[in-house]
Image 1 (cartoon, rainbow, N blue to C red):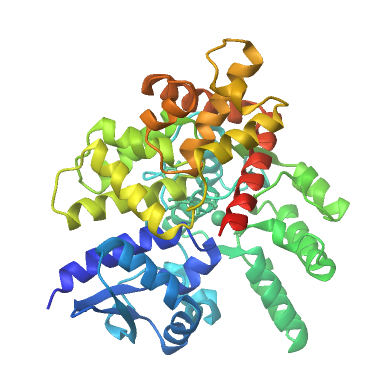
Image 2: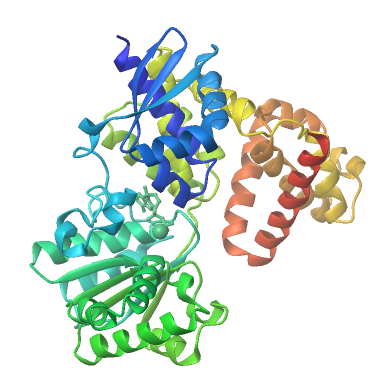
Length: 451
Ligand code: ADP
Ligand code: MG
């Protein structure tokens, strides 16, 4: 049968796919899939409905096959099969559920994994966590609205759901909605002349959790409707919590009156985790899954898992699944291999060499590649060199030793030091962050040129 193998291999594949497709895409098409069987080069993936089967078959087949081949090193043909047995036991985000009204799904409106107890608190999110807990415990009495903002994959949705779980437990009438869904429902209501019902639904709750608010910015009519909903809830001390990828003042084309409403509450940021935090998160996640991983292996993952907790989780799952597949203990080498094998097979980073990175970094610091490779200790050159080490680590699958060699024969501890230092400086300096993002863009445009 090989179904356990299928299950584990597919979990590893999902770990890879998760970082390759957009979050929305992943949720819609991949989240509820399972590996059913793997036999004679045929890999059967169970999906919740024919709609998803057709989509995956038409649009994602080659990416999926490439990923599976990368993991199993064999030739594979993938088949998508509707698998109803999975429907009840899996996550909460299918297309079908999207259309069911919220009252019916209120118990499953919240992801059971996104709770306060599974949320790891560190300096990057301490304030957001405390504020979220505060409004969950005393809704409408402290900060209203609570506005949480931060980059992708940093735990905003997790916190909104955590608030929701507590509210449900306290029998508070709570509604969680993404701004996108709010918009779609509003448009449908307009079209079907059911705006009264729409208003009743949103204005009748005691707590409204609205996610990814940036989505409504610039959509005038929806903003208008949300403004009135907001006022009605706010005037009667009902709690509102909002998540956004940008702070209110940076949301492009948001109406000023809505902006000032948001600014009237508490605004908290979630920062990307630094190296130490990433390590702490990985440790906790490994513990949750009851897998023992040596710290040195976790460090390898923390080094690679840039600035986003979702990605970090994806890498960890990938490493765990990989080591289960090869039935070996997790060592730093194996962790690096699990990550790098897949990176070189599937992420399309082929073509990026250390010298491309060095050249790009040198030119954006107005230096030459030779400057970076020399042993000089001039301060400006040192920074550029550290950025180069950091970016080679991010963009290629070179080992620490190789990176040291490329940059004037430095040893691997120097490279680790550089990566950690840049990592933490990126957190502190928006200027450096932008500069590095720019370099990454240039580097990836080189990649396409090479392909
Ligand atoms: P966002 O909404 O900010 O894009 P999510 O809330 O969807 O991010 O988080 C992405 C993933 O990372 C989720 O699986 C979430 O559980 C996890 N995550 C984020 N922050 C933390 C944290 N502090 N502790 C534990 N898991 C976290
Ligand atoms: Mg989110």
